[in-house]
Length: 82
Image (tube, helix red, strand yellow):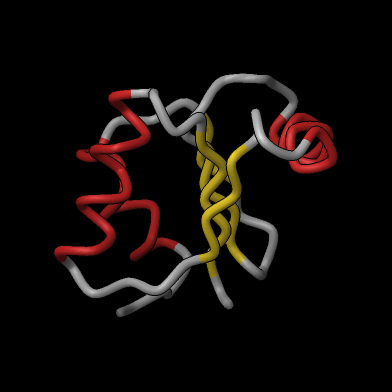
């Protein structure tokens, strides 16, 4: 999977990020950082912060604590298409 989306399932920004990715046809691995502490530790290591949503690409790109409007430019910059 090219994308990992770290979320807290109750987080409205996380829900919006998931919806945007789904509507636009992106495939991703969803990781609930409250369910699995190891995922939380990995997210904070990769992003340097603890806020969600955080999107990580296979080539090391990290978009942390973002709104849906930031997704399209980030994915384009990293050459990721649905």
